[in-house]
Image (cartoon, rainbow over all chains, first blue to last red):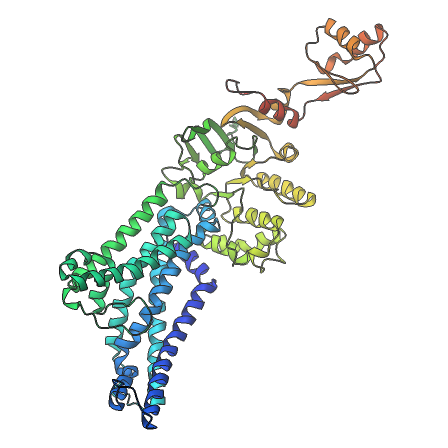
Length: 294
Length: 317
């Protein structure tokens, strides 16, 4: 098993895709910080110039208050949510690709013919994905911290007591944990369909649509929470205490937060989902005859 | 005092017992028994769809047998697959590697999976298979022949007791095919067992000690090359003008199988009857321009065996 994992990490390190994704998450973290600063600064300049503003436009004070979101003291809220927004999508894509391409290239069959076991194959895939998710969250969060300091300095904001490292690490770990069932789902679909594309499509559709539907249902009637709270998105939200808008960028406060499940229960439900998806993938791998391709 | 010497038969590295695989209503492999010993090259022959690749798939644990068992180095593949395959190097018909990795890195990835001293064998194997110069190039840039060579190199990473090669000469030029034939004989010389599935009967004739012919998943002939080709018999190619009269005379001598050819007749008879046939024709005033003794080649036997419906045909040995 360890030999297979070593081989897996060796191959992953030589692939472009994981490196490109790391680059993108760093770029995205910096870009969002600069975008927030740039657009707020532009509005401040406009107000200072004395040009007439439409009714309901934010005041100078409100804009200065809003700009504080980029300060290092807020990285655990804003920075981590930016990284989560981009990171979750990238990790779903990567999970499906990491497994699905083995079937597309026919290398699953090659690995088995060289003595790899099906259990070992799945475990090494899952462990390497876990490892990569941790690296991506770490690199993304460090980039967000860097972006926060750079932009704070450019905006002339006080860095105060700086980053609360423990709080940022806790927020990043919680966010990363909520991606795991989506990654496991993408992996399971890739195994069943022998296709990276099907895994990516299913993973992303569930990621975007389920959260949206759950939020709409609970907004319509809070009793629906008893049903949708068994889904992925509500449990993920319960852990991070925000509702993903399904897009990168700042998260919005959850209008239905009072109906979210208990965080401990949410963590258990998400873990169960991971196990169920991995078990489904395992069952399929075990029972399938591997002919041409995989 | 001299002690009697007991000669041990070579170790069996692969044995299948009653191997069966059904895909729905189709029986791909039907009760196949085969053995490969150390130091021998066994050819697995059969027309397309005969069940060769399915058999190899079951030996490697890629396909679950419906019935029967495959043992590698005495270990049941279904029960102790990873232990059993530790001593096997296999190259499948479709050679698949990671397109974004170089040839060297592909071998290294498999070597890491194999463990032991496999990593140290990567560069010597690239050199042995003539890929040292292109070892750093991406696999996706390799020609079909280079891919085959890399596939063969990968089989030798674990220093295997059993090497399974499925159509190893696909895509190789004649010089490359010769190199592979020499390599296969070298592998047997290194006391490894080799199971070679091939469509190239000339290749099989050159390198195999024994052959197994399967059709529709059933073993229809097996034995040494001499034993299998003897099953096809010897015959005479006779170049003669009056074919009808010649055939009539030869039938009078008890010859049962006579085939007409554009230049004369092919007459199935024992090799020692050449003079008798010639004398009979000459006595009747029919002078043969040529009377050439021929032995059935593996190709003749293969075509004869596989074109005949052999549902109940016994194995040749």
